Every structure is written in structure tokens, then in C-alpha cells.
Amino acid sequence: MPAPSANSASPADRPSAAQSAAEPEGQSAAQETDAHLRAELGASIRRLRKERGLTLVQLAELAGLSHPFLSQLERGLTRPSMPSLHRIARALGTTQQALMATAAVPHPGTPAASAHLVRFGEGLPVVNSGGAARMLGAASYSIHPVEYAGAPPEFEEYYDHPGDEFLYVVTGGIEIDLQTLDGPRLHVLGPGDSICYPGGTPHRWRAVGDGEPIRILTVQSAAGTTDQHH
Image (tube, rainbow, N blue to C red; front, side, top):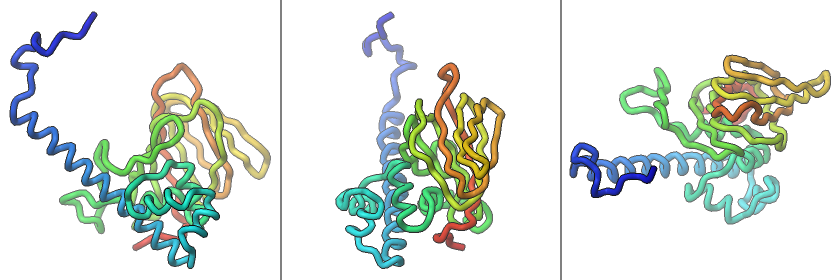
């Protein structure tokens, strides 16, 4: 059935003048928040790079990324994908999650020292194959909770980090590949399933099942990272 034309909409369906004015204002606020989060992430990468005595060109070579991209990233003009953030983090001796946590912004009305509140849709989304990742924690805490929406259809590169990790499948299904000390292990996980693995375990996952939207929660120990701020 074709969609009704704008002329056929009832008065109740048409946005009021106040609603029309509020939408650009809301979009502007979201864009400002996104820009602030990108700037925080870029500043953290720049600070760590300088602490390690690296130039932009040297970090680019270590991470296998372009110098112009890193320059834009440090200035908050762009955002990385999870694979590129992983390469940057390894070159700086930290983790993706630790870098993402530095971009956390305290929620209005909630003192950062007492709690870190993240509402639905808040936080800096980082593009991941098949979807996006969203940091739910902050750098001042000893855990890094991350929400993943979506998953790649096939296995891609392995990730590893110093801290132990817990993974819980909220919706959908995944197959996780763990390169453990006892050899490779494959596990198919569905809604309500979870798994823990020690730090240093190369891991990756892919989507399986009937196409139900995938949502995953991981909680990584911050132990072993080098850029926590208390």
C-alpha cells in the first residue's frame, strides 16, 4: 500500500510548530554531545601518544593506519571503528575499552564520584562490523561494560586484552571462537547464555541463527590497562 501523501495527513498527525522547532534543537544538542565525546576520545589518544614519546607518524606506523586519519581523530573530527581503535590501543599499550571509557561524560544531576549513569542511546557509538559498540562505563571504574548491537556474519580478526571478560547474550545468537591455552574452543550462545574467559585469550564472534537482532553485553576487567584515572 502506498504511503499517504502529506496532504492526506490529519491535523493530529502533523507536527506542531513547537515540535518542529524542538526537533532541530534536539538534533543540535545530540550533535554537540557527539562532538564533545569525539574530542574527549581524541584528547586521550593524543595524551597517551605524547606520554609514550611517539609522534603522529610513529603511532600511525605502529597501528598500521594513516597519519591524516590519526590527526583528525586526535582533533575530534572523526571517530574510529572498533578494529582501528584496537590497533591504536595496542600501539599505545592499552585497550579499546579503556580508550572508549575516557570519552564518558557524567550525566547531569549525577555526581561522577557517586555513580555513572548512561541512558538509552547515550554514549559514543563506535562502528563495529555488523553494528556498533557503546561504552557504558567510565575511566574511574575498574570494569569496562560495553554493549554491542549486531555482529559480523563471518569470523574476522581476533581481539585480546589483559583483563578478564564476561559476555552475556541479550538477544540473537552468536558463535564465539576462543583460542585458549587448551586449544581452540567454539561455543554457540543464545539469549540468556553467558561465558567468561581470562585476559589474554584471543577471541572473536560471528552472528548465527535466524536473523534475530543481536545485542550483547560484555564486561571487561580494567586490570592491566595503563590509562585509568581515579
